[in-house]
Amino acid sequence: MSKSVFSKKYHRFRQLLIQARKVAKLTQSELSEKLSRPQSYVSKYERGERRLDLIEFLEVAEVLEVEPATFIKQLLEDKEED
Image 1 (cartoon, rainbow, N blue to C red):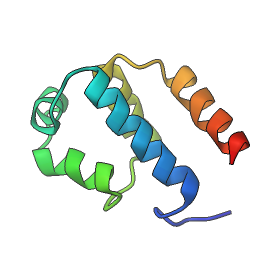
Image 2: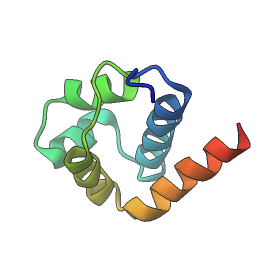
Image 3: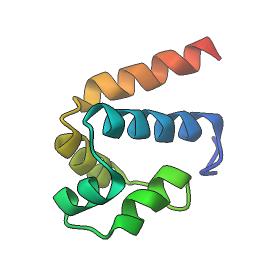
């Protein structure tokens, strides 16, 4: 079990978060404002400089109007294709 933020799975997780933000037509600044966090918070997790814990992920998913279970299912399906 990898703990690295640089694993393929975590890289794909970050890609899916970026994609969801863009689908929501939000900039990092707009998303961070909705999360009541600094813009650097979004920038750092999108670049892999910090990891999101489960509660943080759920907060981001709510703002992006992404169903967490669907998001995770997509992440797991992508893994199977590797």
